[in-house]
Length: 112
Image (cartoon, rainbow, N blue to C red):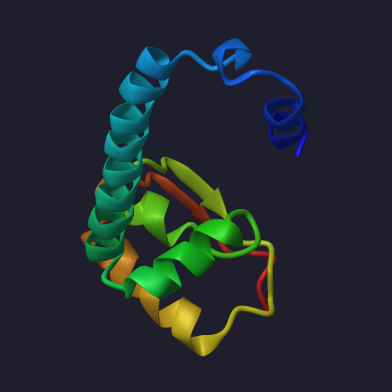
């Protein structure tokens, strides 16, 4: 809104955005967006879920099981403190455990 108001009240030659910088930043932004999309697709394939489910899981990161970290072999210790794990999450967690080689400590004593 402020840029639009500035543009309406000032001459076009005084507009504070350099067109060359804008021309350079737009392709860089497009490249960055394409890279982020690629990372999401690769992450979804790695965890064997749909892209939509992967995005939802990333938004809820910290609230669920660390399935992505298990599949990426980025987890050494894990303590499951939650007892309200859904059967689908538990199944994906077990599949990720089968393929994981980095986990050395798994604490399940808080589970019922």
